[in-house]
Image (cartoon, rainbow, N blue to C red; front, side, top):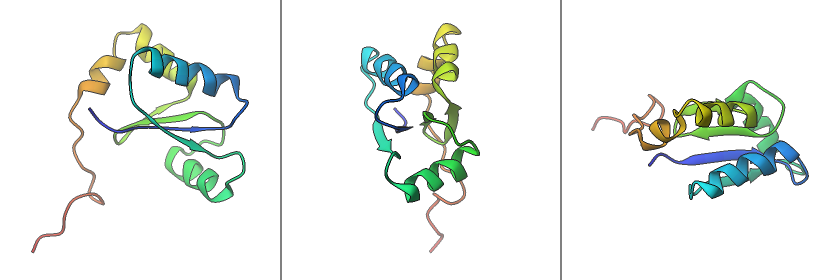
Length: 97
């Protein structure tokens, strides 16, 4: 299963809903709190090209926010994405020796 990352703030209702869905589906995820960490917030904005939370990544795929996550679930595409084998990006590939 690819790595799941979710950028959040503590009191964001959309963050809470997105985490609830992932938890109900028994999906392990890394929560990255950006409320008081401007460096991580900048990282989120560079990766997602968005400034709102949550921002969800499954492997190298930027899912988007809470509504996007729930839409994938409604379309029965979330499990497919979670079960996909992630191919490394150019930056993640090992250099040839």
